Image (cartoon, rainbow, N blue to C red):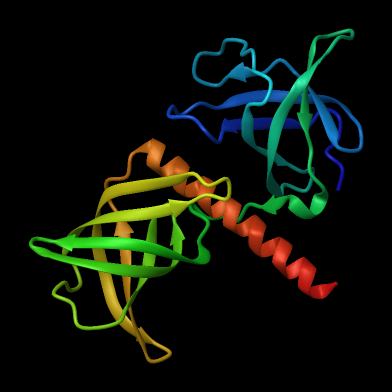
Amino acid sequence: MDIKIGTLLQLEPTHSTRIEKFRCKVVEQTENIIYIDYPTNVSTKKTAFLIDGTEFRATFHTEDRQSFAFNTQVMGRKSGNIPMIKLSCPAETDFIKIQRREYVRVETPVDVALQLGNYRYQLVAEDISAGGLAIDLKGPVAFKDGDDVVLTIVLPFSNGEMHYVVTDAIVVRIFERDNTKIASIRLTDTDEIDQQHIVRFCFERQLLIRRKELNETV
């Protein structure tokens, strides 16, 4: 699936402590490079000058209204009728389809510390999204449905970076599935920066799962 000339892209930095979004248009394309016009900062409406090597998560929509995302990096600049920025473009197999739901949930183990008053538990979530988690309970716990708790979520990224999300949450319900007790947890006070880290983590894990599935079929 080629990204057609004229496609609008939204770029979000993957290694930033600020929430920023940029919009731009694809003006040229080669096999693994796309050329965009100079992007506009969505908040300030000002033209942005992107630094070489900066990494972004790019999202776009196809003509049939499907949404996709991919990781990209600023590769340089090119002169022409209009000034252009070069972005790396991965193979189609590295594009992730964005589901039509508020937060994408990914099945992957995640270390979580849960605190309720003086009780503290080291647990593992079996899936995660920017809205919540499903945590395996290996033994008896002091918390129950409706309790307010504090979570510390450990997010290990593939580049070796480690991020810790500390947030308030609520225990939605505790139930059994396949002879395992599960706590469904909803995040209630996650700031935008931490949400961005969780979304980035989920996207990265989706990509790893996709690559593993493709390798298994070869």
